[in-house]
Length: 109
Length: 520
Image 1 (tube, chains in turn orange, yellow):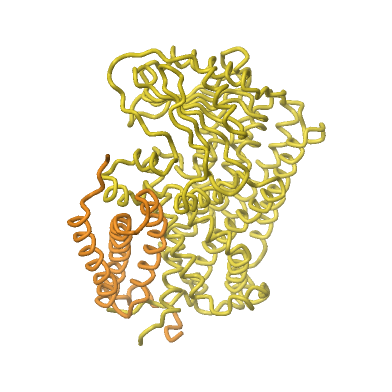
Image 2 (cartoon, chains in turn green, brown; image 1 turned 135 degrees about the horizontal axis):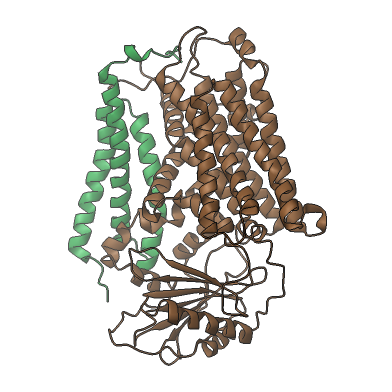
């Protein structure tokens, strides 16, 4: 590891702290958003019975969120992390919008 | 210089593990104890001798009538009554009722033979530790969200820990106690983590999944317009819910319903649910125990409340995705586990608790300042929380058991006093590190915890006369467990007192901590 010794607190600038905070917020909210959107979308479009689709989509969502969080921290920089999450979120969001327009929200009947 | 994926995952592992480590140590320890929830409850009600529990349909029907009579008086306008019927080893009726969606449930325990409170001491038993496991003693919604969020972070910590662990197989056989203390703690952390790694991953993921629809309700939102009850009905997890019509109605006798249900399934009848009991559209659900196997699926028979006619039978296996969800919940709760398997699960839970504890200690040891330098505030905070949690929680649990034996049997609000003892001892243990040096704090709190665990079998023998060598295997194993925990904690206290500091000073390199993340 190149950074052998721990930097003293006073040596770490606010830019670094801001980047860490940014990644934490992006991971938490962006990761949850990604999982939530995928759950909502796949519950509608999976070619399964409705209750099955909801079960399958919900079960998978937690793994999706965990990997999204890891991706945010593994990314080379904060802007790159934003891209890593932002693009799938946009894609899933668009897909959900389409699915709702085509299928409509599930009828309670 | 750019750090690679391994280094960023090491950073993530260290920080995510630390942030939730204290909460998750508590979740892990109380969860591990919950594998023996019924046994703990039994031990905490020593007056309740084993008695043959009649589980014939007629006997269960009678018990159900006793319960309904009590509930008609206690909660006639409730939204739902939940009656847990007697079972082998659990001869009492457990009643719960929901008056509104926001208010906490009402509870009562009845002796089915007399229809009144049983003649055992009031206690929450093992249910307190079980509820603490996923609610942390807080209001349910808040507690479950906190535990759920921590569980997701722990999942991230585990996965990043796996990614970062380069020599995961060879390191398994490495335990370098004689090198620096930091190496020793790291090896202990790796070993306990990797030895039961499949269990750890399984238990955390299945734990989150157990509350899946609370944390991730968006599938219900999009595909069911938020109608969660309809999802359960379509997944054949419960009979279709009937909304109340607003007209009062009388509930048909439940004993014939119980007897009819018992004839429809070979499984033991576990529970009776009455929805909207005072309403004309009341329904009754007879819930059976899960068939032997992995999944947490309860066969059910639904009845019309007013007439007692069967409206729905849910006796088949559910469909694949629902079954997977049920199997995951089943894995987490391990109802299927026989005695030997339960011991294995318990040991895995102990290893998991040790992984969290060694991780927390490792974090602080890795950041010890050079000799002569003052400890930064953050480090002092971590060290204080470490002692308060890793040593304090066991002390609190021992105090809970001790209070059960020492408090007068007819004390008012006795169950609340026992819980009070748990939190009071924990608070005191958590405050000790503020008054002593770090090493002394570990010694003191671990020592107190060991003494409290040692006192439990003594208090038991003195106050109940049902001691470990009296022939009852439950009391034997409980005493053995208390003594083993006392020995383990006592050993820890002794080791904490040794002059490890000298060795640390000799071998200690400048603290390496973990590498920084990439700057943006």
